[in-house]
Image (cartoon, rainbow, N blue to C red; front, side):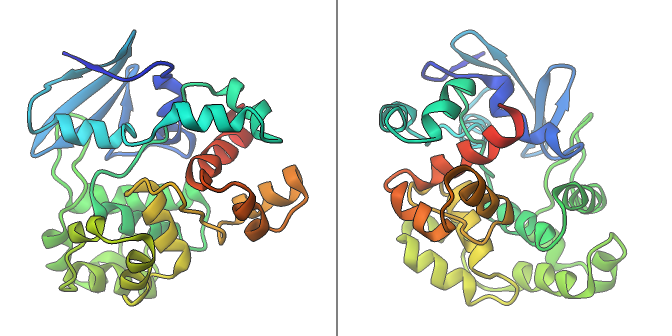
Amino acid sequence: MLLRFPEPYDFGVSTERFRAFGTDLANLWHEGGLLRVVAGREVRIEGVPGGVDVEPLDDETRPVVLKLLGSEFELPPFYAWAADQPVLTAIVPRILGFRPPLAPDPFESLVTSITAQQVSLFAAFAIRNRLIERFGERGQFAYGFPSRERVAAASEDEIVALGFSQRKAEYVIGLARTDIDLHALAALDDDEVRARLTAIRGLGPWTAEWFLARHLARPHAWPAGDLVLRKAAEVLYGLDVYELGKRLDPFQNLSAHYLLSGMRIA
């Protein structure tokens, strides 16, 4: 079942993040395709000319796959703009067709960020996998990311046993049990989203910005607190990361993704 994506689209480059830092049980690369459990069913996604082949593809799985594969991003305007931008004009052609993946679920996005706070992404993926394996629903090979309700019912000791620090376990349980409607954040503007999220214990500006970038696909999201992005600003541009963010307006989010991926794989 073909799900079309506008050309250029490079499925391999676009899904590289799911392989770069170790196995991702919720977005599992398996025998040349990506597996994701959606509502108890394991969905297989493979790159084909014109887009991706999805099995099964129906009204339930289609929106999840579209979100996961970053369909919300408008690449042509970004490419036209980047052609005249220093650094990006060299990086973009090397990873042309890169469509940044997105976390389909807001709770998943925030928990993923909590696991990555102040640790390497390799360590974060390993800890996240243990959470997924312990509390997620298993398909044939991949696992569904644990539901908010399942995590809310867990104890802090159970989360710590998976490799989370005591503080991060408190953050994850607290997030799961808060009464905030995470799905409703999509209807708010960027500053309102930042304010709502940073009011929750354990969620700071870095986490809020990556939520805007990797869940809501907001064009102006700019995770200035990210250490690798700070390094990119200094090494590639000789600029402070905040100054660079201003110069990359109105495509801060896509620019951040292309800079980070370009440094890793281009």
